[in-house]
View 1 (spheres, rainbow, N blue to C red):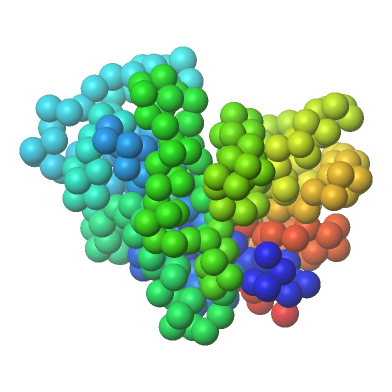
View 2 (view 1 turned 120 degrees about the vertical axis):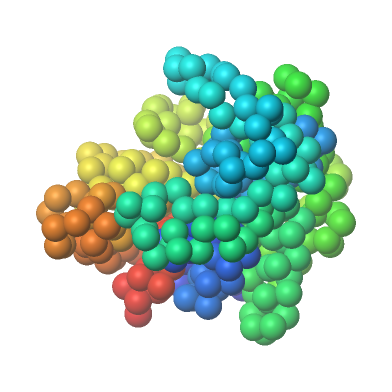
Length: 322
């Protein structure tokens, strides 16, 4: 997808521009593109009717107004999440009509009060909405606008009979994406959907979409682990602290070398400017929400050959690249 940004690293607006608007909103995606993002990143989950919507979490209360909805009060239920009982509203127990009637809210209002000022301004989007937004933005701006789609909880949703990959391909077909104007990447932590999409792609039954293996917590260990990733993915997208010394990585050079040996381009995530997300030596000011020197991490990523910079402040990333 070199046509998006030439030889420069891609600037990827993580869930839009969540430092300025609530995540996964039309306003946030538009602002990310205005700020210089080449690609907008969207996480998708499947509602009870298999429609894909732009959400990251299994639960809805943290980023929507669902708790204020009297008509949905009786849909609240308990689940075990990370070995703890959580009472919330769950996307897979609501229809797309119900989920998209919700209004978006800022995840971290104490860190991002400016974004919280827009709570309630935007409704939850479907994946089809986001793809159409990107298509229109590419036409308006006369430049390619990429969309990186992160598939969430694919295996868990399969257990309840929902085929996330089929829903994805259906959405892509309906809006006639990807295209040169609107290239698409599909990302997943789980191996299964990438293996399936690659098989479909190789058989001509799915679009020629680059597939991205997401990696967090620990880098792949050993030659076989890396070879297996290269068999199913075209890129690897690693958490910052697995790649950048400035984010705490202890063997980032080794990780990048393993990827390069298999001709796997590397993206890294998530670049965030607030002190709360930066090591102490890069912090500036006294408040956790003050901006520190995230440009140090941007410059290190570029020096290490990272090809995609995924972050919450695409304007800051773009300035650091200039």
